[in-house]
Amino acid sequence: MSQSYVVWVVAGPAGTGKTTVAEFISKELDAPYVEGDSLHTPENVHKMSIGIALTDEDRDPWLRKIVPETIQAIKAQSSSGRYGVVTCSALKKKYRDLIRTSARQLRERHGWSVSVRFLFMTIDEEALLQRVRARKGHYMKEDMVASQLRIQELPSVSEIDTAFLNVTGKTPDEVNKLAKQAVLSLP
Image 1: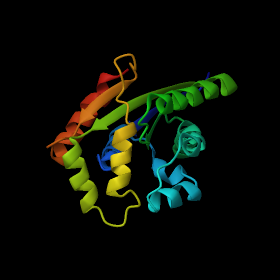
Image 2: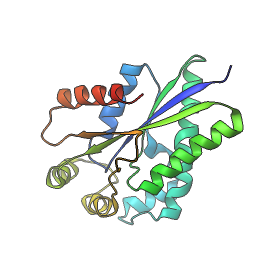
Image 3: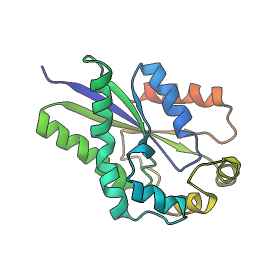
């Protein structure tokens, strides 16, 4: 019998609350959580920390790690685990497609059933910038978030593996409730 995995990618610009939502979903699903930023190379982290936006070439190896590393976390947690949760901005369609491709390659290589689901978080731009200004000690600064908003491509209706979560003006409890509904809305 082949292994079956579902990787939930909590996506959106920095400052939307991806980590908080991913940790909540992880607990709800009793699934491991992988902090996607931890998968960046030291060179990428350094670039971002000094205000240099990553290129698509910089992101490529990072995006290719998202699904395999999450599956490794699932396998490490339990032999019967099925779900994993990871954070990744996944701002452009081609980034989401690359993540989907890595899942397909794992299916082809190992015969596993690997599905990817995206929970794409959105927020009003001014609210997002206020959140980022208030964060201390994070390498993503306000100008980097502004660059993320410039390149962001919201998922289209053709991306049927994606649910949206607008967090503008919502309390953490409201966001968690909406996140749970979104997760339950996708097969």
